[in-house]
Image 1 (spheres, one colour):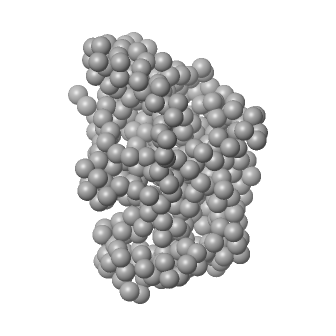
Image 2 (cartoon, rainbow, N blue to C red; image 1 turned 90 degrees about the horizontal axis):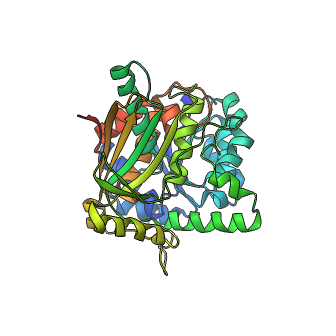
Length: 393
């Protein structure tokens, strides 16, 4: 069966979980019963729970429900042969995602997830990138807050740099100016699973620490570590380590790598978060270093837990990208999102990645949202996810 003739356009796998339910809500809210709405279905282990979530979110009563279980690869193969795109929120992916990636790569089914687990991502790249290229499957990891705003923020800044300077900038700093939201239980579980994997296989430490862990065969220049608090004169604020930089920087470099190095092979990139000016800002920046030693505290959120609707609504984020030319000229670009980053905005990003994949004619392979979808995804996020992308003068 060809991809275009399959029963569904998009299947949300993990729809009974907290984030999966939010992705399904996005399709109900944004597309409803419009004539051009995608043919979408909800998938998970329990038909009764799927039906309960379908009714809870106000989805049509005839929304298809598909039984699929990570522990039963046959159900994943069957799922992939019924749909053009799978959106999965079933993590930690290193525990529950490998068979689904393999099934998508075999069947030519497009795939997007919310993965922030670089060791597992590299394992999947090594095992399935060539299979996906052959079958035509476009596989996009990290299609949520890690790492879409950062991946696409750099991509759009570089487009603006070429327009202004005639060439890309070789150095970009990302500085998160503001963020309000909570960590997801899935993020906590993924970090825990990664730490357990490192304990069993210490060789993973070098992969996790390398900005080029997702660019097999290419090792670029030394990168700024982004781990030492310092004052940034041009921004007038203290900079502190940013917990998501470890995964985001790897995805930014993979986009550059897969796209033929439009940012240059000498490209340097880092991410940090800004505190305030003065001694208070310095103290806050140093406090972040201590916080990152145990980011989730004594009681990390459990998978399936999440903020209230009011908390999701009140969340937001603001990431500034500063591009620097060797001559000293600079270009500023901002990506700003409404809703809390870990849930409200992430669920919209994953949903729109699926919609963009439906319209894409990109070749198969394991890529990034930036390398596979680029500006097409930017436009969808502007139109359907309340995320802004703009040069700052």
